[in-house]
Length: 116
Length: 117
Image 1: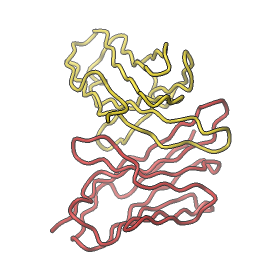
Image 2: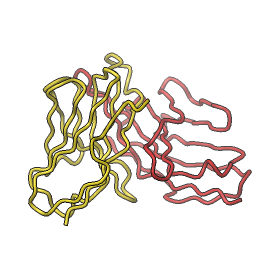
Image 3: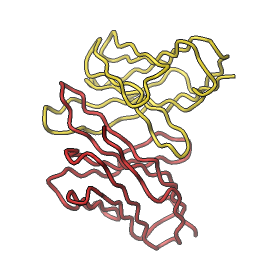
């Protein structure tokens, strides 16, 4: 089955600097790659996603890039702010073979800390 | 406007007890999921369901079962709780988006933290 590896497990950056989190996946047929942010004590929430027909997607300070040949995708956060401190999860959606079996396989998570 | 509700935020159970974790969504979503969250291991899929009475095993189904009798409700059952099932359990739902389009956005519940003594 699909396996998603995420690195680094922890990341500390100065406020205003950029942060990059990387993920690799194993199933070349996976076609949907979201990123979730989980603030302390809260539920994970989607921040950005990309589908396999697109190489890059941006939303203000965050961007995701996808390299299907290499089977990896990355989250880029520019001009980091204290409220960016959270745990970030990448995920991949393997192809489904029956109605509605659209599961997500998550990476291990990255704890991002923004230092003022 | 909470859309995915997990009935218990914190539970403490004893080894061997039967445990029920309930999840209800009000978005008329077809897909529902149970994940387990442990530090350093991310979110691991236990079971998921794409329709009433339908279920599929995720990556770590051992020791768990599920029930989906109504579209809005998805229950996780620990038949005989063990200490290694101490964890945070997250329920999530997503809409069906059609064959070939890939998964869609998950809406998570607030989580149920289970401690098994």
